[in-house]
Image 1 (cartoon, rainbow, N blue to C red):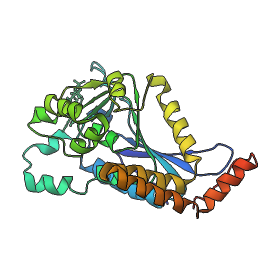
Image 2: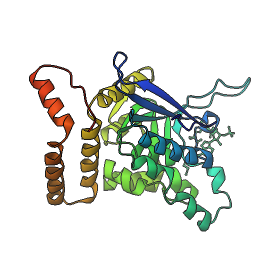
Image 3: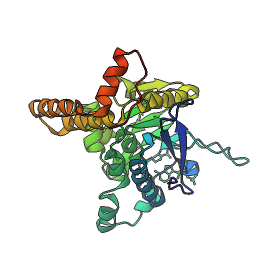
Length: 280
Ligand code: COA
């Protein structure tokens, strides 16, 4: 089953291990660099289709989401800046009323990304603004280059975030900082994003891809079954009380003792071998 690519979305399959056939990392690139990879309807439709494809392809174990680098500038023109995604495509907001936007923003591609059962990593190099910051917040892990800048500038358009930042950004950076970002629209540079917990790691631009792919490979080499259960349980911490969450964890942990991968992992440890996961 081939990836549903388009003019604005590219999907690259990278092996998790060069020597052993243990599956792939899908690297999804949002490819509208002349518009700083802004999320227009075509990107959003495509992103939803790619999420469904990632979920369905058993051998795809991790998803990386990134933005295309700038094209070389046309003669006499200045180079466009690096961007992960500079937000929803603002041109699609002109003249739009609530009915249109309600349809567009309900059950959207950012939710599809958030709802993936597989591990997701945002690889951010440049502006991650508005919907771009929200795409990053919908991934499980964020790794950014040191020239990246994050923000929720919707207030400058007379708006608030619409792809989940009031909830997911708040969970990452906390109540006060989320208010500051959403109320001021100010951009947060990468080092500050790291300090406030918005990104996991900040690296030099030239090290970004290797850092992200190597982490994706490490994650992809684990039991997909255990990863899926772990993701679900960590997610439950967002909605449940600590007491309920610990109960959820206990049930999930015990459940894993009936999985094939638990016995494979334990025996591999005892025998000093590399586990050959069944992913169930
Ligand atoms: N929607 C549509 N087009 C966008 C866009 C967006 N969110 N962000 C950037 N672009 C387009 C620009 O219109 C421009 O297109 P053009 O060259 O055809 O005129 C191109 O991308 C480059 O952007 P430009 O503004 O010229 O780059 P810059 O270096 O001067 O500024 C930003 C970069 C990110 C500060 C600026 O583009 C910006 O503020 N973008 C909007 C961010 C935003 O408000 N996002 C939230 C949307 S809800």
